[in-house]
Image (cartoon, rainbow over the protein chains, first blue to last red):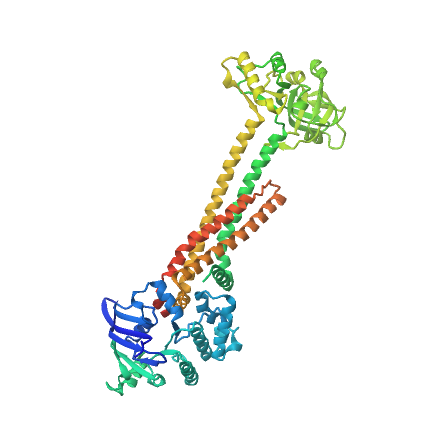
Length: 246
Length: 389
């Protein structure tokens, strides 16, 4: 068996909230291999966000190992984590998180600026990424001049610009209507076919089903195969209920 | 991420918040402008004072008697000064105030009783007529030379030459008019009447010679001449050194310029404080800007900005703001100085050093007061920052 790209072993994370200790993640293990399109599903409060922060190297685990391409993230300092985020991870957020004062092109260029690329190379790369998401003629627009779907595609282009190992999408369709959601998911599928690893985090089973592989997080525990064997019907219901509660 | 990229980013953010950036800079602008203007005014007045003193001639020694009861200089004593090899000329002064009248015009002016050498000792020149002669003094002639202002007041339309003015009720013939020398150190040099020493002593009924102007042979021998005069005075009036003083123009210049240097320093100090306050303004706005842009910082960190990059971004923004403020402040400072020079006819000295100093000072303030907000920004937790709306 080849070495998995992401290898998570017995990961634990707890944090204090209002004097209470919350076990956000308990003894979680996960392997993500080359070419994977994996979706992580779970209701809110399940530890899903914490897990995403871990995979995205925004947070460090209390115990356990997180290896990305064989390198242990848990032992890295802030600077090394920033470099990993810049090179290995491409973030796609629910609310796009584009910088509103920068044009689409400048937004896509941003990770490359932090990588230290020259202005010319940056522009070339960013334009090619915008072309990939079909927005090359909108490069000069500000995010506020774009529709939600277009903004999310700019965000995807930004995530792609750094040629990351993993595209980490956190509820990428959460703020979009069903048609544009579908477009974005199709785009993610295409990217996966081109060889990008995609980690999709969602509470929506319909969205999660688009992935090749589904894992489910519940109360800090992780179950493979969407926990199908566990309680197949509750996956969708749980998520929907929790979503409506919000 | 390199420096040019950071500077571009900072300029963009400044452009995006024009009003706020301007308000931030305002403190620095006012600070730098006031440093430049106030120091310019201070140095200008210092320069104009020393210029004025210098224009009186650097060869000049002034012997002033402060206690006229114990030190009574006689005309014979003056001869001993003239005998000194370093002294070229001696002009004793008797002064008082008199009422001068011509027809219906009258003026209260100061009268200076002196000898013929006064003209060259003080470096004055005549606009018309002649100056006093030795004969006038010896024969106690009732002749006067008028200062420019006195001549204008008494003879608004007529030529004063050879006319008679009544001084304290006695007629004197005008033999000459001095060229205007302007006011010097607060006293007008033009509102005077100059008469022979003997005539004046009789007129004001006072024989005390309060001041003696002595002209040294050349400017190099001034200090030696001063010692020699001191020597003569000690022989004439032993143990009376408190009752008179001998000063050269150089002494006067040093005193005056030390006074105005202190003033300049004080003005500059006050202006620097306003620059400092401007720096605190920059810090305040940068702190507000950091909390306003928490989300942006979160996004930047998520896509791989290092702490150093964020720190540099905010620090450079503060420094660029201060620098632009400094540049505008320099322009404004020169503008205000020029305005004061033209409209308030003040002497302003423009100094590149002061401009450079205040510019560098404002940059330093940008760095010092930018570090705290920038550090705060760089330490933000990306997870919390991203969560914030």
